[in-house]
Amino acid sequence: MRAPCTAVLVGVLAFAGPLQAAGPNAFHQVQAIPLPDVEGRIDHMGVDVQGLRLFVSALGNNTLEVLDLRAGKRVTSVTGLREPQGVFFVPKENKLFVANGDDGTCRVYDATSYKLLTTTAFASDADNVRYDAALNQIYVGYGEGALGVLDAASANKLADIALAAHPESFRIEESGQRIFVNLPNANHTIAVVDRAKRAVIAIWRLEAAANFPMALDDAGHRLFVVTRKPPRLIVLDTESGGQVANQPAVADADDLFYDSAHKRIYISGGEGFIDIFDQRGPDSYHLASRIPTRSGARTSLFVPQLNRFYLAVPRRGNQAAEIRVYEPHP
Image 1 (cartoon, rainbow, N blue to C red):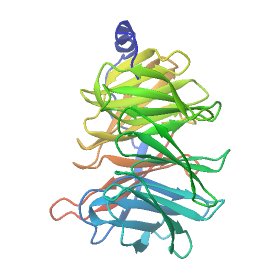
Image 2: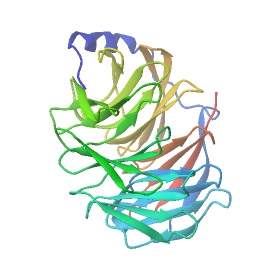
Image 3: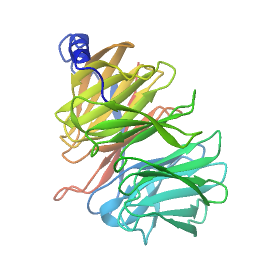
């Protein structure tokens, strides 16, 4: 996850121009979906694009909230979870895969009835979930350092890929065989995994700490990572592992997405903002807008097929939890 120190200067020079106010046509809120009686921290989200459903891991509430995006309301809560974190809906199998931090399980549900189908137990702290569509496989980051591989059809465990520390966000390369994995507790590195060999083939080192969110511009060979100590957006060349940009970003970020259609990067941070960076070239990024949100609203989901950005806003005092829906514009 790390690159030569000299690349930091290159990244700093790539940041130019003043912060511009967010215009009404750039990224505006179109909806707010209430999450009544949802308490505590909200973690990651998944989506059913065809069915227009949003799945929200309400970690502090021990529920999975299912939202109807057409009606703009909750349709059901899946209970009995233990700190749900990552969630992924696989349309081909009509299944929901939900990773639980407290008991280390990945629970698999029928996505129509929400009936529990099976449970796979990992060592501890099952966290982020990703899907390899080409192989119809689910990846779960868990424990003190591993990616678990499940067959999406049967939900059977196929393999483990050992890592040096607990994996935070990770991204699967569609154009090749690699997986890029954030390892903040392993000297703030990125592990590069060959998913055919099921082994780590490289370690990239970062010049900042607490690297949690990650996004990938596969076609452009750029990997985006946001750190918390200090809050920075760091851009790496996936061909060399070298750092090409390094810029200030919103604090306490937990999710990060690349919008290839608009050439933008979206970062949600618990500091209370969404940062929007314009990609002006593979090595040039400009902080174009900072959207005020609410303290603690650090998890989100960008769905390019719907051109919607969903922000999880936890309950604070008398303000109930909700999902804010934004529409990006050119």
